[in-house]
Image (cartoon, rainbow, N blue to C red):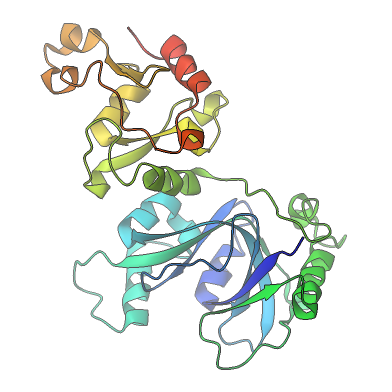
Length: 305
């Protein structure tokens, strides 16, 4: 099976911060402009090539998803996994790369390449990307069906399996002969995926003011829920809060239900009761719709009826 790999030009500040955070399970390798990224599919390998280090590969991760987001929401989803200490620092860096004023209040849209299982090689393990050209400004795509791509895959695999890199063994166990690697999605990737699956609209109200929307876990992660689309709903913030607290739910047949407790406890709720019994706006793809089993779990364990 042929597997694609991308070696992408990477900012040194981004790399230096994140390689000091081995606990991260996902990172956002962003681009300053809102360009789409279709070079890889989920489970293929995305590698870091430092901007000012010649052709050296210094780490990478498993590609999960690509998306265009306002930088404020990228920060909310990934925080320091964006490779910056603060949202202000990230915004200033974007402005610098775009060569525009960083003091305005514009919420830049950026290209996000979301990676799981990131790994960062020690300097002794940095190695040259095959046939890298100095005029490459963004990234180069390889394939394991060609000699260069297979050489690159094997060089990465060798380093991930070295005994002197125990912090990489969990990732290394997932790399063998060229094959797709199942991305282990984290909270940030979950949020971005659910946002897109629901076409950036609240599943109940169809609200599309993006900063007002949140990706809700149907079965919370702390209770065994997974970071997968089938365990998610995109909800307006207030409805998300009510959902988490059991005042509203979604039945397995995808009807929105509102508890009588809202009226009893708050003598209010008209804006929510008007949606009671309505079908939510679920994805057209059946495989991406909420799992009836997790909806049943929420009905039985959270909803106050």
